[in-house]
Image 1 (spheres, helix red, strand yellow):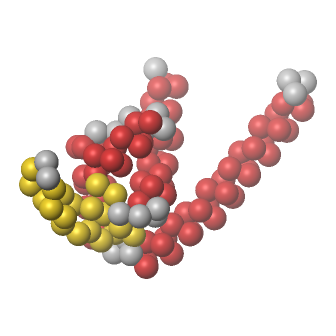
Image 2: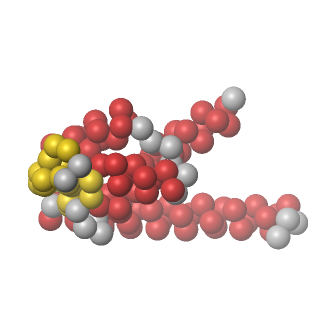
Length: 116
């Protein structure tokens, strides 16, 4: 059970970064965002996503526009703000540093245990 809890916490810690990465490519509708995250094996539900999007918007990292839809009511499309682009750049640097550190430790562990 501990492994599942730790894995969940690791995924939660990277969810915000992944959301910003997807939105950085252009305007995104929430269901399309959920679909892409699920395709990447991030299990996310609207109850988790909407509060996170609202927090990012209130922090000034996201903005949105309403667009008419032929399939029902208008849809909210999110995009990065200038502050969001800067924030994402900082997260990119943090992710690279973290990834490099973990890969270094993994490589050293494999060397010392003979599992190369």
